Image 1: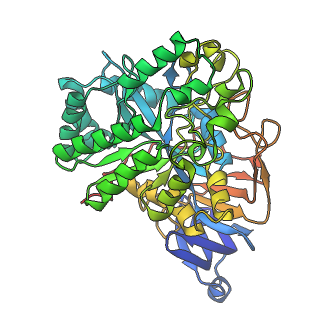
Image 2: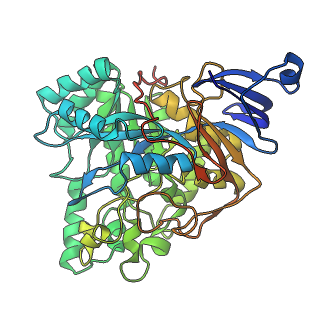
Image 3: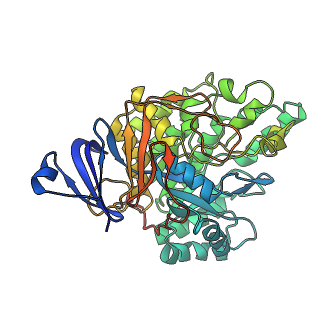
Length: 474
């Protein structure tokens, strides 16, 4: 069994920083030694990595990705192979992707399709949430089957996209009641899709077709309203665990904070685009350039009545927002985003981001928005706990999987299509962004998958992770 020793680094956990040396045996972390113990005990290894001046952190976990997702007349451009490779480049060692069931389709067939797409193709470990796009007696039974037999313990519902994924309040309540019985987490895309469709039609009737109207037609008030409604339904269903995905709006954050103050099982995530991007600087770029930044919920205006960026960073500091994910859903401009030229409502919704989450949120540490410990907590440890993978994942500890990132705080990373960019898109939404830090080495279950600016992983190394129930419930 191969042994790797990582020495002289600073280990970061959610509770603090400590000097230590990490011994990896095979696929797991065997021991953590205090400085000097390795020499005193005569510990040897097949390979020793010197991490002097660098951080040793758990591998990142992105709990919201969409590889190969059919959407808007096309399909997300990253396969499980290209997407997992890009994730590894960015210090991500586990993704949780969204298996899909639409109206008229069978839930178990949908999950089986996602297994076929991923199996043998991933260079890092992977798990699945299940999208329930058609709620009926059979899909409710299937939810419990997936929890008990498939290691799928979270289900995503949509209050948006009528006619595609949308569920009405009655259907949502029934799914929540089922989750309250089987212990699953309900993940919610919280936007009032019925009202949004009216606003979209009105903009198009006025020939307001540019990409910026994607945001203007999806006001933050409608994200706040839907979040409130989802929380009320979760209370009616018996305090069912509710996780609001890709939160962009201060009004929605207010609702989550209030629910948490009441002691409810309500959690939320945000994404890097909602912490940094604005309608004016991105969606409103000249011509059709703004299409690169079309995602839902949308990028918000810096002139809105609320300071969304400031409030979301505050939410991360205060633990009102538990996790940063990416909602990685990549589309190329050519032949994909271009489907919406002349009609913003036909632009495929999604931004490629799985490669850059660890980098972008670390920049929040540099800017003083969050601490190093909070960076690790929101990107690594809490995702593992929230979705039933801890302590196998998400922590540097004996017995845990050897999913390890060595991070160099003294180097820089320039993101861009001709710089650092390994996702399968013809553009970078983060073009020209410079990060004050760098992913140095990435280890997935003991295998080095990235080092010295070279990908060393292999297709098929990644294993399916059967998840337990959330560890945040009461």
